[in-house]
Length: 371
Ligand SMILES: NC(=O)c1ccc[n+]([C@@H]2O[C@H](COP(=O)([O-])OP(=O)(O)OC[C@H]3O[C@@H](n4cnc5c(N)ncnc54)[C@H](OP(=O)(O)O)[C@@H]3O)[C@@H](O)[C@H]2O)c1
Image 1 (cartoon, helix red, strand yellow):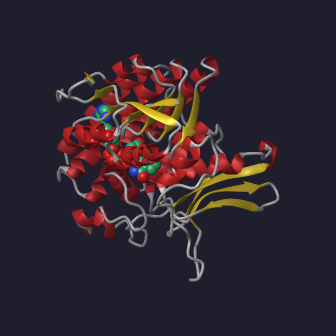
Image 2: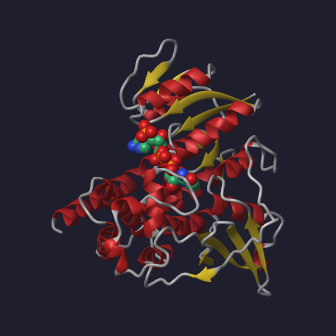
């Protein structure tokens, strides 16, 4: 039996992972974490009697379950596998601890590789039993496509973007979008933060940086694919392509990695209906319209302080947008300004990275106050 802990168990990815774990007899769920969602954790505990410990910000008092408000305390329990589906910068310390504990990590938290790519890659060389597998459709697609290919044959790694709900609006037109329109993603159902990030394209910006750090290349490109059917592509030296193609479904991605990188069937899987014509379009992204994409390509050619700035400023702006303190278009404006004014240097360890993250959060809050 493989023992597993799910961090961020109450979120969109966490819950999808749990529903797969319920049908997979190879795994025993030992620990789960959330932040504030007590009701959801209580429901999870009822469904999995194998859970020994939980982490939440506040204690909830559940019989026979150990509770911790320091999320890293869960590493005292016996498990070899973790799913890191915590959202935001808070996920980084979990990834780093998991590597140092030589765990097998199924990583949804994209902020880890965005903010600490070099640190993670260096730690993976030191803790050789630790492995990271990407729980994200684009990166999982690249992972699958790269199997059995020779790196010298590959010209470019390509990920796709749906373009979100405002793909066909000009930058100026996004000034007039309503609060509710931002949450209407055309092809995916996801958590609040990532849905907003998909509308601005900061999600894709983070994914570009994540892919660059994860696959250790700057030869990354991004194409718009509004139907979200194509997730990733390889472009070879002869200008031929290979693509990863399926209906958008995070469970498919999670299932692949939970099953030792095998294409197993799973309950509720979706199939493409080819009795209808399947159309998909692929197009380059206008980087002047989608400024986050321009910033991401700058960030992959810079030290990690730039990616940390982009991520921290965006996290603060997204929270301010949710609280209705700023308008949708101001997310991009504020992040771009903070990014431009941030230093370009390598921050080497968690202490340096988190201090810098905090400093950028404070600067961003000030920028928002001064609007
Ligand atoms: N959603 C997707 O389809 C998708 C796809 C690929 C990658 N991702 C990435 O996966 C990660 C999770 O995304 P999501 O959409 O599942 O997010 P989500 O629905 O917002 O869930 C986030 C989870 O993290 C917990 N959490 C939030 N802040 C925390 C903190 N400060 N400390 C500890 N735990 C905290 C939440 O607990 P509470 O419920 O108690 O707040 C929840 O369990 C993100 O990095 C995202 O970019 C998501």
